[in-house]
Length: 193
Image (cartoon, rainbow, N blue to C red):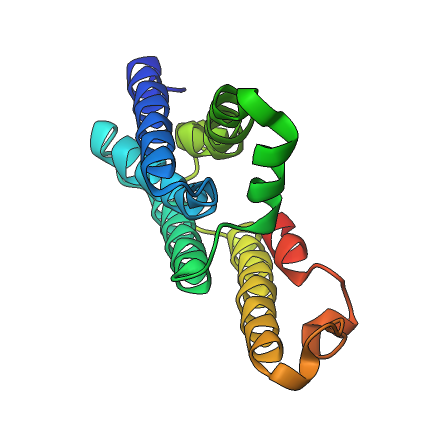
């Protein structure tokens, strides 16, 4: 059963968080801050819900721990990737395309919608009580292995791409080595797992 009071607090907190990120983006003139905010938003949701509903169960610890590890790694990676660089070309192009309405469209189409998707994707975290069995079983192990494979694909794919892009001889080339040989988007494949 979901604790609806805690859920409403989480929703309000995400709304406030995305508004703060929007204000920061406006002050820095960089909407790509939302990419860093994405992973940290899941960290915020996880920690806040754990504080608001502090019941401890093995599955809940595992799942929430994995969300924290994933969110922190992703935000750190994007922060270090973007540090000292101009705004991501996609966001810069949207500003041009949206003209005089870029600020309101950025607010709703970049920040608020990401907050909505963040809450939608994190929604299963609020259902931890729906599993009456508290001991871990084979399905839990399978879940851990699927998560580990996904995290591996995402983290290693990011690492391989960063190394590839840091080599000046690869400028203008398409990455087709390592995990990138098997999938054009190891990060998204990893996140899906």
